[in-house]
Image 1 (cartoon, helix red, strand yellow):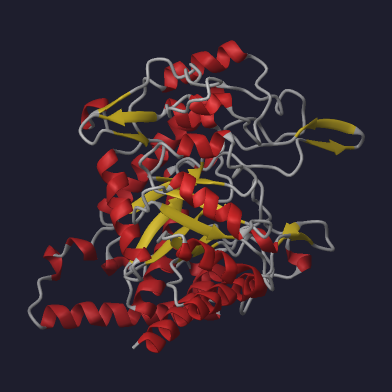
Image 2 (tube, one colour; image 1 turned 60 degrees about the vertical axis):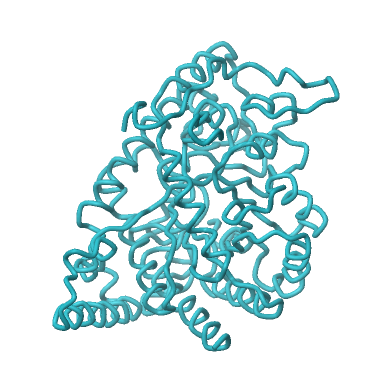
Length: 477
């Protein structure tokens, strides 16, 4: 991809503040967020270095293109209309070291498995969005951590600092923003090669199943589904359908997303498209605002209010109907289909009471977002062995409550948002055959931040979600 691939232009001075700040007037610009409070930001020790990095980033080619972003908006509009389902999935916090062919392939493999199970099980097209190629930053509950009496800044993801507990590693380093761009570009190149070059071909559906997954009950169920898909393809060919000419059977579109946590980085990659007369954040197809950074008058909401990308909002248990209405109005005043993805992260046992009033508030205000369920973040706890973890049964329970609330309100449950790994990690409790117990967590606890589902657990959950979708479609007939 080169700069000539798009009509966008880079801002010439990304460090300039909003010229209208403090005048009582408000004119959005890519830098207007700078006059507002920005939550969850590291302390950058060298402002001049940060400014140089921003200007360098502003001259780099876009990572994604406007027409791809608008294609995603169109697909999300279909989901919001009840004609599709969103799968947003990937790493909790990507590591620079995982942006290799093998690392990207392992995550893509399990995303493909989950997506095909949802598609085959529900009969709905699945829009696939990865937490990949940019999810290098993480909000944290505390700015520092203390070990053996030593207090240091908390690890905020590879885009900011290193995980090693040393003063040098934990120092915020602005040059990591450039490294994040470079690793995102590398990951996207691999993704495009795999998704368009045959790896996502439905004829490879058996090859996506790893050996350690096949031995599980979920893996064996997946193999049965793969057999059914293979026979369906043969049936189509026998009936005279030229399956080789059907591009949708041989390649997929996987969009990218990440939390727009660091506005310096996002602004530097925000470009104006002269053809469409719109600003786009070209760091990813979709970006979202976290539950800790969704302040109405904050920097994150301000920055994302002016871009043409689909924008997600994490909706936590403290979100009130009024707050959510105001956020929707701020980020989607035109009530444009495909613009908003509202991602509930309430915790198992809370959705029955908390979600319906939020659904009604948004609907009654005239917005038609995609509602997606993040059943991961509200179900995190520290186990007896001292590891941060989640239970698969709690994750499944929250998804069930999400579907029930939408059925109650007559709305379409639009998607799920998962943190998963493509490997045989032991970070979340539960699962079939080889159930992960608390005593197993230390075996392969490899996450950079929060616990992820392994491939077997992801497939088991996918079967459950497909079941919920089938029941929903049956009720609607």
